[in-house]
Length: 88
Image (cartoon, rainbow, N blue to C red; front, side, top):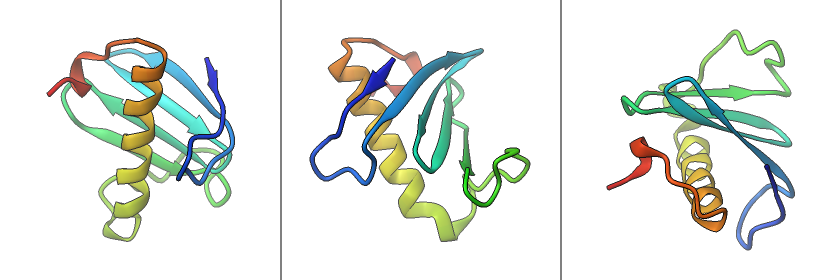
């Protein structure tokens, strides 16, 4: 699934994927994976295209992780999809 530009978003397009036990969102610079157990992975595709260095718990990437999580939630809502881990 590909989504278009969202007001206030830093990205133009994003791709949503369902991975084992979670959901993944890829945009023009990042890959964010959020798992049902509330753990996450975040990769900077410009600096780390091989996805070797998970930045999800790196304080320097806190704002990007938060924005990617919001974008993942918005994408799921827009597509009328439900991901168990994202439910309140």
